[in-house]
Length: 260
Image (cartoon, rainbow, N blue to C red; front, side, top):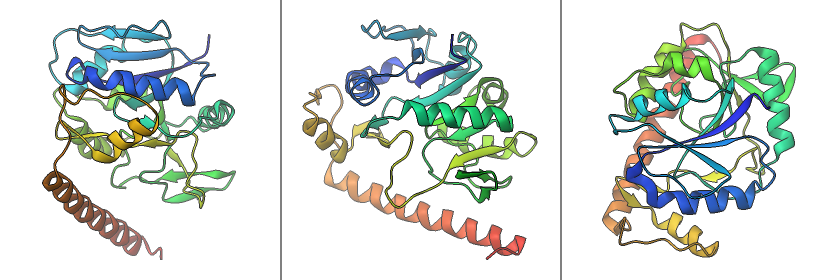
């Protein structure tokens, strides 16, 4: 049995995303050799390739994830969210190579999609870099291979994914285990490439719907509405502000450390 599992963090509130997610997941990763788990509350996804972990009442995101992780026997998990819609074929060989490197480095996490990417290069690996202590979003919910025990140690009941990324990133500074990430490249191709965040504030993002239509996947907009033009403008403005703040934090950190 592999020591790696794929875990899709979700809950019954987002059950309408499961069919688009898994259609694209198995279309782009047909040779996935790892057990695939889905976190739910009570609903079960009707596909024999998916093992549903029903954790019961939906208390909060982190508590659901803690409960699910405690029921998975594997030592490592590839963590995904239910609105990360795969867009390109996944290279199992590349994932296996990265997992082997992660074990060699005894890393807590290896991010499979560089959002954000690493701060410095790893001298013994041209494809991977290290995310330094103190970096914003050192803990991220982007696709990554996690040491299950490290992830469990960083989770706190009651936290949302956004709180986990901010507060959990600070908690990672107390760990000796390195945090790694694949590097950005000119082709924008990574071990797992996906449309990130298909749902914002409970509404489908227009570009995600267009992706589903292109892939001939039906989405029931009577269950979850499509964002409005006003929603798109607000989201664009928030992302621009967030990108500026993130760039500024990187600049300040590098200036303070003497890096250019």
